[in-house]
Length: 398
Ligand code: ADP
Ligand code: MG
Image (cartoon, rainbow, N blue to C red; front, side, top):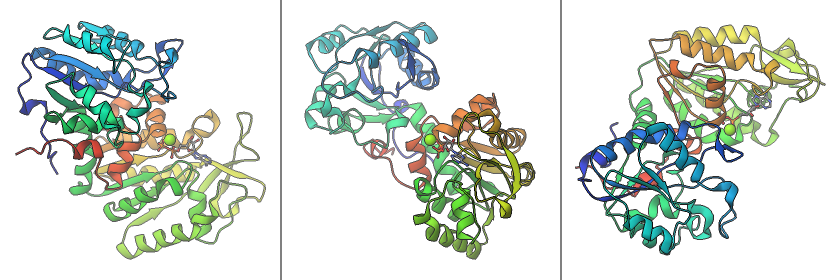
């Protein structure tokens, strides 16, 4: 499925004021950006706009301010500094979003130059999608560009609002993300192997359901595997379990079977006697988890089983780590799966989800994947088959 909305390529931006919502929600430490992935991801569109002499007004949220006014620790200034450092472009920052100071800075903006506004969430009305916010922001632009994939699933003022007042189109990141994450479901090269892990079944119901419809093989790992084991009538010791979801997990297993979708569950597990940095692991088969042990990672036999399935794939979608990868002693399963995906150079590999992406980065394998999504929640909603409000609000391509 191709992207069906207009993009910056479809409009004239020369000399125009382009109001662009980006996702500069970056991690900060002592006022410095510690991971600039999201700033980098916005550069292709910004570069295009600079080359086409637009006057570029960038806006974003950062963190979770209370919404009662400025909070210096959550200022966007460090993100603006990072953008200037990465591109060498003329990037100004104004410590105002909705007031006369912001308006004056916008009015002074020359073609080919960039202005970054202060955090849109310093005012409560952003999150409540107050029409007043949309009106003020829209007055800063002649056109609106949405490139904030990471927040495109939120119907908030700066994400959906300006589309009511200005011609509204997508930036390149948004286009690529939506295109990639929808086309694997429309026409995947087969076999399509989906890998789902992470902590809970309950937080991934929509994703699991949709993957059972789309994939040929569904590999399950992480904490959620234990709820599936319970659905099969096995005991799981003190592993993470969601009793309320056992029945739903059983239904999924049944539905997968009736559709001929192969489900792979761990054969063995690395278990520990408690959850903690100082915990040590031991390997036990899945049907022999002691009552006082909890599953923290997939075991070595499981790594081999999963690697074989991944090696045969033409399409891989992966969301959710195979174990508690934040602790080195329980990161091996996730690393083995990441290696298996990375070494299958014949497949299209798409990684989505905050922690899964962090894991792939941690193992230094990011550049071996076909696509790493910059959006956690937004990518999950696409994988669930939902439409994103931000995208819906844009103009349809002819
Ligand atoms: P993502 O952000 O990629 O969507 P999730 O947020 O669903 O992934 O899950 C990530 C979390 O799951 C990690 O913090 C990890 O420690 C945890 N996790 C993985 N395996 C287990 C397990 N066996 N027991 C408890 N937590 C687990
Ligand atoms: Mg997560």
